[in-house]
Length: 327
Image 1 (cartoon, rainbow, N blue to C red):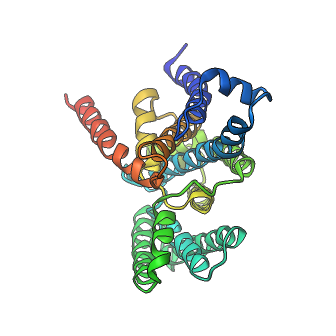
Image 2: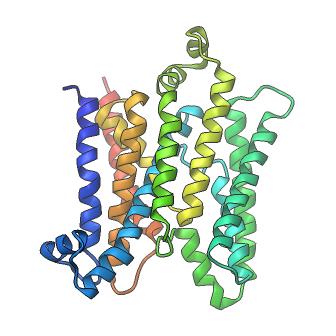
């Protein structure tokens, strides 16, 4: 068996293991026998509440959000031809953050925060797309620069909101900005979004392989490069918008996971997209488990954990990649 399908099988096996680990660990440790009874429908009252009502929805949501971010990162790194591209580089998360923060400040929650975050993400996506296209040719450099500028504008607006917010609201706003899965209570919706996103992305595998070799090569082999660019951009943006809407801003997942998958299984996007989604989901589940376990019963924003883990992991991957390219 080649390395690519083997890696997929390994990740398929590790994904449920990461969720089982998340179900067992936390401020209350659940023994394997108790965990099995809870999952098989025979829990005691405390174990059933902790496992089925608190940890399982959160773990499934974390897996879906991690998969969405890693999938979006893999798409954007090819689209922008930039290894440092991540799901937040085009300003989609900034627009979502502004929509969510304004909702939180207005005192509304639940569906209003989710809906306004998604609307903000869509506004940002359309704004970047329209401005980067302009009247001239649409290049990946122009798209990247437009996205960075729009993201900076959203960042300034977010800073203004935080600076003028009541003191008692600032912690809630910061938790959302840094990534917060404590209110992720719609796991089936999150998993469905991930499945639909994967189904939409996987047919692009061969085309992304050609695009990674250069636009001229892709065009010479029959790909409609402009249509491909637009399709990949909107797919990546929608995946990012869904992830940010579900859990706030969680960094590093979309940056380091595609690099790690490429290092382990190569750059064939027919396999890489699925592998990235599986690895990103498992990574965020483990990070969220640490976020709610390290200083239990207090919880940390999961974005803090992904950053603390992501920095050394990325530096390690960078060293390995550099060493591999050295003659």
